[in-house]
Length: 244
Ligand SMILES: [Zn+2]
Image (cartoon, rainbow, N blue to C red; front, side, top):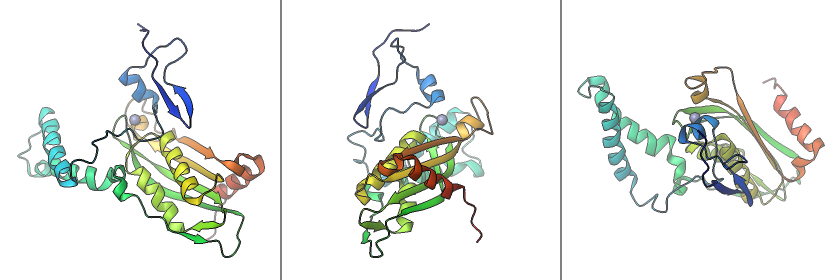
């Protein structure tokens, strides 16, 4: 039965985006997960997100994860399982979700564009591993970035680091794409930025609909990349196979 409920609205890029369909139907938690709905460009974080230290967070997660395992009926006295709650807690805080903490944001130094290189720079095939925020299972794939310098240039490894920082959060692919694009626009002081994310979602292949072939592609084209010729040039470079 469809219920009429308050429409869940959010602001994306200054525009109101609705998560309800036209008759005001509000999606259930299950539907939001399976439809992979995103509510905001910013990762939804509570105001007290960093009140606890990493060590305190790991202690808490360890005890909760132990409880999950015990609830599932697993015997935590088994040698193989005993250390799992602690390992998961450390992995969450220090590795796969470390990008939630702004303290881990890469420091970006820009350089003067001495060569007056004013063409497109493309950094492609950046491998990333992230996790779906609806199911906490992996999303992995390639990111392709491009920008046209507005007088400043960025170290190539920093492009990679920006991708890795935003990947290390519970994510939705659309938001991941936007967060990288906005960060590039901010640091490079230009609208002329493009991002393509080409990814596999384990929540689609290993559970739910169990489609192991499906891939998800998302894109962002800012400034000059909204012009067809510039966009096609970028896409051509992505398809190019290098002879290394
Ligand atoms: Zn998912």
